[in-house]
Length: 133
Image (cartoon, rainbow, N blue to C red; front, side):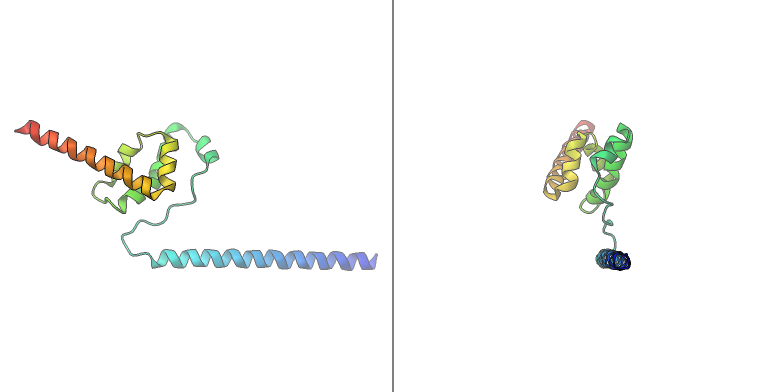
């Protein structure tokens, strides 16, 4: 019985050591992330929170879903089009949520959509100035 208790104590100690090691690794990761964020130049949008999960979106109302996605899209658009970020974000939010989630995960696809939105805005502006003449 004493031997069993010793084995249990050893197992508990090993488990505690493993937990301590995992916590230390998590702390290192968090410190590395903080250091990377600190190195970002000023004026650049901070990294967005963790990716939107389907369950988090499913639990939200359609309006909340668009807000959640918009809160993540806006800083990304702000990085390339600070003057038009609000307008472009609004335009993109008219898209289907599944497409928007793809844009959040694919910088190339997002840039292509931003370029499309810029073209639409430019055409609209040209039509406005044409009507005024």
